Image (cartoon, rainbow, N blue to C red):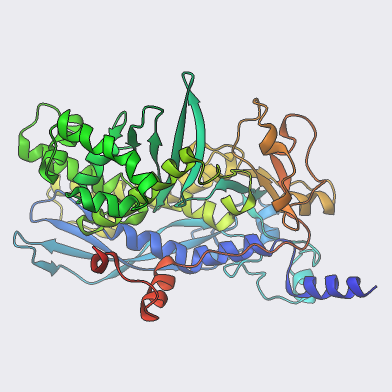
Length: 505
């Protein structure tokens, strides 16, 4: 009986879909603003360097525009009955700016708050009319007070967004792979920044060669050349960044000699020239060097930063990856377990909506640029209000929610809410889906892993091809949210526990 009291007190504080609601609240409170700050402004090719700078964003309460033009608040029950979408207007501050030749920017007009589109509202979130209502108030609004909420209403249909399971981003994972009969020792990282995901790897082949791969370049590149291009010109720097352990340095000597003798690469410029010939063949030398640097900034380990100052940090990170790959070969470390739950992360409703909003907002920015340039061609004075077509954002989000086809080619992310019974509804809202293919065996991925204890229900999973790939969160599982890396780093620097990389090298 005592355990019953504990469980009851837990559910007084936490609802069954609290993880989704909290995630969505974080998205509307800070996620949308972060996406808009990343975008910053719209650059146009209008004469005089006309730009539109973005400011604060505001999400209203759910409303509906009637046929007679009047606007009134809408309740979830009304949206269900009338086959409407339960969505809120999004307003964004925009300022017109003229950019001079010598980087002087002049504000052209007043900041205007423009309606940019509609955002589907999760029932029970802070943007919803049901938020903070008592049982009696919910009943008067036509709602069931026992309904878990945590879903959306799109065109009158209730839609649940299913949490997606993913491998952890920005962490080095080691594995052995057999390629054409030979074992390759790999250290890889899914480097993720602002929705862009780049797989970067360091491979140690059987003949001792160390190669790296990253998205901006086809094929692989010798690791030592890449490290030289990133700023480790001296061999001693390369040893220092990878490891000063004699057993590991012995593995590096052959690689360093090969770069000198075969490729004749000594300086950083030589290394950049080698990359430049690969990414921009037949172009002038200055362009090749610039292009090589741009690719290293934007596509190699983008989570470390995309500025030139971050290149040395990327070099150190590559050194750590190389060390891990060599240690795996020497038997000093074991392969990382991809099925260990510490190496997994969940994308909840807020994170998935963030991906969708980022994509839709980028499309809106392209449309604003096109509309402003069209106004200029017709010799009209540029008007921000006329350039923003709100249905660009609204329709892209609504279409993804209605069909379940998400950014990045994922399907079935949003599903029709199962109302067979109360348990079926709750089960669907607490479901997790793995991205692995259903047609292949994946025995290890389907198995119950010891680290799922207390987090994943051991028995609730479908039979057949989805067995072990579609899971459910355990009844008393709480999903924690990530904290901003900068806060943690600043705290460590204040405590003198970590030195900045620039001081170290």
